[in-house]
Length: 362
Ligand SMILES: Cc1ncc(C[n+]2csc(CCOP(=O)(O)OP(=O)(O)O)c2C)c(N)n1
Ligand SMILES: [Mg+2]
Image 1 (spheres, rainbow, N blue to C red):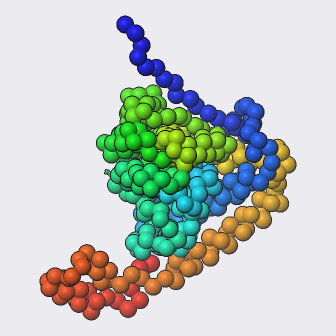
Image 2 (spheres, rainbow, N blue to C red):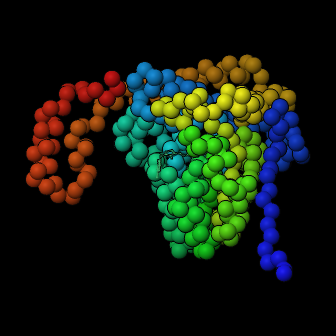
Image 3 (tube, rainbow, N blue to C red):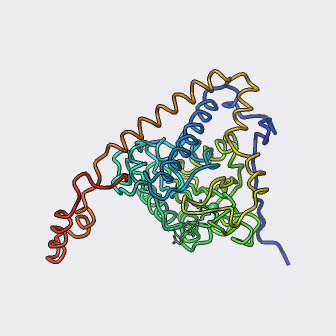
């Protein structure tokens, strides 16, 4: 018997949980600029996330999927993707969408139940949120196919959760990306839970990254709480895609520090000990410790930035809350090119019964 194929899956990390370098850092991490920007963006993402949950609790926004614990993945992707690349996100990428141009008020509108927030001009050619699990992986493969046919140096980037990797769509997308060597980067936000299903029950393989191997794609694991490791992996993958060197699958190991959504109560299925241990690994504190140790960030800057972030959020929030609600006729208006008679009548009735001012935020 001979071995016809073997492979290895790498795992990379640069900063320990305590914010100490685990290995020599890449050149760009020897200066403050990029890392301080990452830090500031993560702090903004987290404060905004907290604020949105408070809005949901007071009935001012709908069911919301928190990003708590996944900030590093979004922030680094947002920095490294070119505006000409295309993002095909899932429902946990608010910070990334905003870094790519989605105005905060539009993002809030979407989560407030107004679909117009999901069709924002700020999104450029990026795709809207995908709620059906893993369908976006195939959309990204389609986008990447177009880039390849046109000979454009652009990358399609798509993200899904650990649970999403069990869907046929995900495997189909990997397969076509490998077969056609498409310029696409697949990111798994492996936050250890798919609602109440733990990673251990999700898949029998020791890594999710190895799913790439069956498709002829490079697959790797990276510490998803470590902005330096993420930066290295993602910039390589984007470069490879744009240069026609093929797709990459990156499994970013993170942890969902929140409930699945505001409609969930994770205390019913996961232990406090596990959550407590995960807080020790979260991405913001460790980068803050590292920045402090280099003298690149201090308490004065922290206070100033926290205040500024508060104002930025307040501005977006005010804009959102002041928006007039969607006309009730929108329920019907985009369904047909030519409206059937029965719906015409219903449309009239909807408009007649619509409350002036609406009840959007109540
Ligand atoms: C096709 C489909 N099936 C089921 C659901 C219901 N659902 C919403 S989120 C979710 C779990 C997803 O977990 P994971 O992929 O790990 O992503 P996470 O939410 O943890 O980021 C499920 C099953 C759905 N949205 N779409
Ligand atoms: Mg998950």
